[in-house]
Length: 405
Ligand SMILES: Cc1cc2nc3c(=O)[nH]c(=O)nc-3n(C[C@H](O)[C@H](O)[C@H](O)COP(=O)(O)OP(=O)(O)OC[C@H]3O[C@@H](n4cnc5c(N)ncnc54)[C@H](O)[C@@H]3O)c2cc1C
Image 1 (cartoon, rainbow, N blue to C red):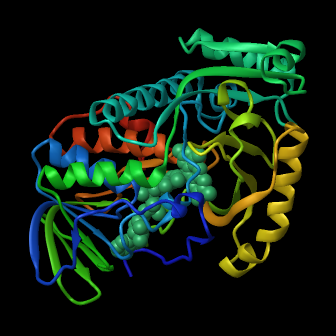
Image 2 (image 1 turned 90 degrees about the vertical axis):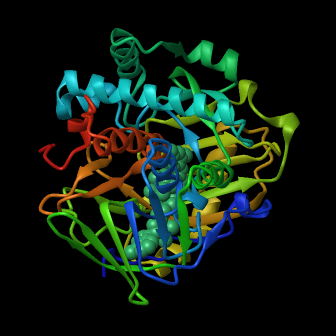
């Protein structure tokens, strides 16, 4: 086995109610050679393949499922630069200078992704501000400090006290932070656009190709498929989401279960500005709207034990999400059209692992974690493009295996 195997999601996601985007993939019927093999055709594989093929490298992308059938199609796709671990908290964990770099890098990633989306005219993506509500992990005073810390590194952030929050957004909470310039996407349309762009640049996409063995040699990496075909490449990238390569050191990562719902459409009842909303609480709640006027709402994470236990909780978690949503916005219609459960990855710092895998020459990991997975996918694409074309990304050390925290 090259990666472990998980039942990544169950239930019906809101994205599955829309026509599946077309991806030009083929089966793999013979041995092939390429500059780079990317394993995984989710959002990470798509962004990485697009970046590398755009840089002139020959790319083969292989997935054991069909494209976009992993975590990506379960994503609620709030694409934010505000990462899961607040700047003040991350500063305590990894030092102020590195925390500032991590936050700024995420800002840059969302800005760059927005530029690519605009350039390619990708459907299903809108620009959104975001509202971070005080909760049981951060109170009003903590949020005030957080706002100051963010502004001190150049990230414009507005602190809203109780009265201002109620007046502008109709929400009754002690305080909130308003951040600017994030995105909300349909994750399948977004991924499909980048897979198609990679394909147009010469990348070959093979689906239903399970990579069961990876042999990293001095001058070449050989990946073997379940059918026994070999893919010889100069570099291999694991973009395998929450199915980790056997060879990747665990380094504190944890697989959680998470749940999400989408309500009935209700364009006239949505909150002002339709900003992305999430809260400084554990367990936390987050929400956004979609183009049909539904509210998509998720959270309630728990330690993953097995897929059956996760799926058994779907009805109960749906009730909890509905109840919390109704408490936040009493005028919303919280009837549920879609409910789903999925695996989710977390690390104490909230940062992803991107970099060359120790003792596996020319084999790279692009493994995103937590609620900022898509932002991290874009960072992975940038760092890997630079590394594989002979450069050195100035922030690569933040996400590398060599980091101790
Ligand atoms: C419910 C939920 C809500 C989320 N909400 C957000 C959000 O609001 N914002 C955000 O930024 N992120 C969010 N995330 C996280 C984000 O969706 C993920 O980080 C992202 O989708 C991961 O994409 P990926 O391409 O790395 O993984 P995946 O989409 O899982 O793709 C990995 C692929 O690798 C393939 N694979 C694995 N092993 C092999 C092998 N041996 N051979 C061949 N193929 C293999 C799998 O079949 C799979 O298709 C959410 C995730 C979930 C589950």
